[in-house]
Image (tube, rainbow, N blue to C red; front, side):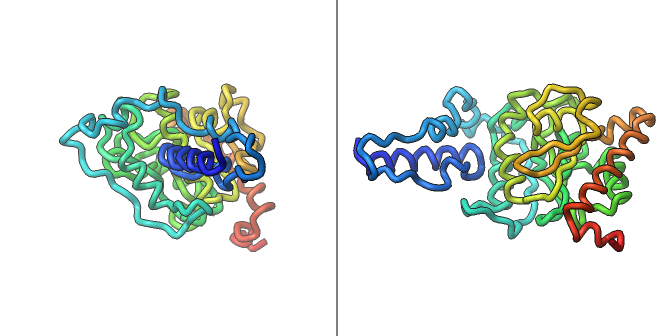
Length: 279
């Protein structure tokens, strides 16, 4: 196999990976120099980064699997955010709107990509849309969303100015059950692409499902709280989901402590945020 043939294969793999993941992975950012030696091979990490055919559901190859009476998904307006791959948030939203990677596509009313500032100080990551979100295409709009807004306002954050809110899964699981592992895996590329584009200074994970997925952990939320983790060098703090607080008011105190810790750290790393407090 000569260098030209290797280059063709590399670019085919790059195109396939970008299609399934929604953005260009680091392995594909720069093409290897296949002309250096006739024995140069395509790195295994490049080949493994494409989506295996075993993970492609039949619904991905048959448009007829989408219900005929399914409403047109609500897609947020375009943004100016972009990365070296040339993708922007609008590209990701359009991919989410067309996605049929898992069975949730057949039961959704609307996809729920995310909402908020496209140049956020903070990204809030939840688990999955509920009934209100499925109806509107907007995350955290029900009672839990109203509580989340109050939580954010308490530390001078808002989805209207400096915060972006989204879920690990972009379609509502039936009966508001927790998303299944394969459903979260199907949406993982979208989540990664959004974080890469948004470049938040910090991430607040609300709920066990989101925290375990983002941090690749099986620990309980009680063990994940009160400490900072890193995701792509971004500080991450975990707290209880607003819906859990609505069910158990005893969680209000722990959540407030988490928010104060989060705000204190954000002040240290972000002058724009500290200035909101006159510091």
